[in-house]
Image (cartoon, rainbow, N blue to C red; front, top):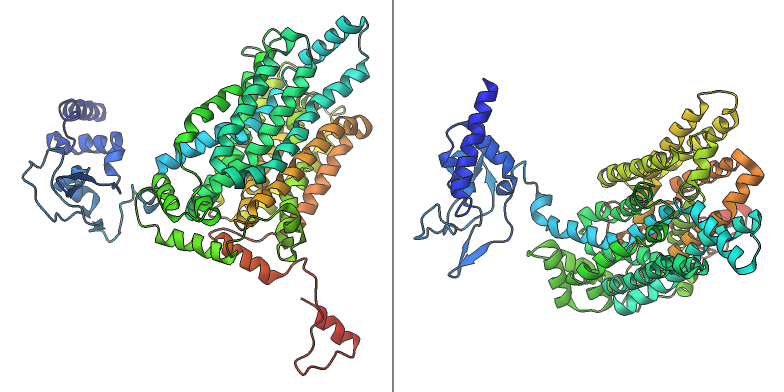
Length: 618
């Protein structure tokens, strides 16, 4: 019986849709005879349930583009009532109905329907979503690709280095020399990224966020062409050059990507939008692991094209991103152009009143007194931002020492040591990338509810626990047959804790704790420390494993524990606050600022030791 009713409902819906879709959807519900058919219409046409903030015009009269909302059955079904202000001569079922929409009210006592909350009508979510995807293509996705693409062809590249050396000098290269050269190839990437991060602040201020992202893709395309022809040219030095250029592209792109998205996102969605920079890092890692499979591009014959895969997302962003506007905050606070800022806000968030947002930007511009963006040296000398600088260091340099990138850079060695079969390791690595991506998506929904500080401290605390347990299980894997599976579960739990905590929060906090004039210099420091930590880890981790064995994970456990304690006492909750409010709250806390000797109210100097201590306390 139920299947028969569903079949009739589907048949009625398709018949009504075939007859009404091309001309008007307004009268579709009149043709449906049963409630199941009407419900199917609601499910299959959800866009009809969304109030449209942008109204169409006809003969200087404003008309609603969704006349289906005025159907009596729909109003009785949803509890919504829309009052017409002006009746047009056009028929009710035509394309333009002549009805002027007033604000939505509900007969059930709510202002908006459940299926169309205020967050979905206030902003152009489609535009924001497309902006997130396009900026991610040439931004942090490149870093994720570079982190994982280097793993699959590692054996073939080492063989190519030895073969090239043999052709040039007539003797094979020693194993230790090949290991050192491979370490240089891995580590030259963060060296280039340090250079890219150092120039990112200056370029972002002078040329704008969007223009820097657009032209940064040319660096990735050039690097891809160099590495694609390296085997044909019989030159492993070209791989070094390409890896350096990839680093410049990633160092510049990561910093500007975070700045651009943060400045283009509404305050209510800032955390969710900014965390997508971390999501694209994990997507890049996962995508690199997938295309690096032997069945796709991970074979010996096509590994140069695997290393050149970065050119595809770079070209996509190079073509599409110029159609988007510049950062609204950059246009108003840095350039002082209110008209261009308003135009950018309308293109990004929809046409509505932006008085509140413009006043907030103008207040921040007044707070910095219209001064130019400060340099790194000027920022480091200012005692008022020392708390922000310490948090910035935590979110960059020390996060690298937590061990997450060691697992990706040396995934093959770690999983092999954990007892995983060699043929299974690539698929296990894909599993870690998928888990991180999934947990970052979950973190995006919790970051505006739970808060940044709770997720950061909780994630770091669990990471400290898992790395400590990993040290124990590594030491017992030769004694217990099922211990390698415990190693695998702990590694997955570690990646899960990273994605739910510091993986997402570490990219949000640096963009929120600095004012507009300090943000470029803050990101330069963040990028430099981030890539310097990655460089040290890439250079030293393989030798740490040779010297310490599984005990090297105790170092990561200790770093995560220290970061948990520091995060609890130092990190400020920034959820729902503007950069100006966050800056004022940091000034009130006065952490890491030089204490001054304060005299008592009567003007007398303190005489006792207790008075001196109390007068210098803050």
